[in-house]
Amino acid sequence: MSDDEPWSVPAPAFKAEEALLQFKRTLRGLQLSERGTGFELRGKPIITLEVDAQADAPTIKAQLARRLVATPEWDHLTLRSSADVRKLEAELKKRLDRWQRED
Image (cartoon, rainbow, N blue to C red; front, top):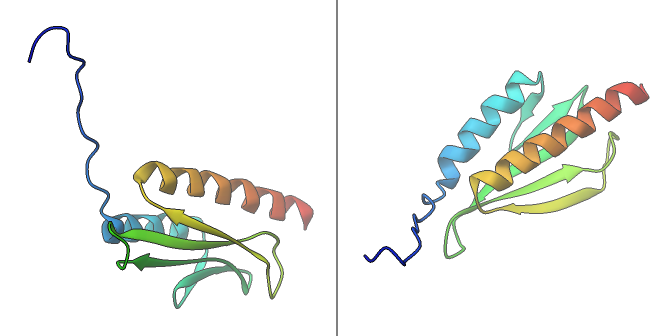
């Protein structure tokens, strides 16, 4: 490699199964109740998660509730990297804070 070539370090491969386990720990830490493939707050569903191994690279399919209601409208997300998981975590925390203020 010459001095003129830029350094390029490939990003580590996204391990969807491991990322999902870590994210579930985070959700439990936020005092959310796990129900099947999703999590609830005060008996109302707020997020569902599942690994999609059918894609070329494994991803996490997520559905995030727009409002805290018994049958929510969902925002559908595909998490392809650790950065996507962190963004979803930040968005979920904002929504939890907003829902708690609304009550």
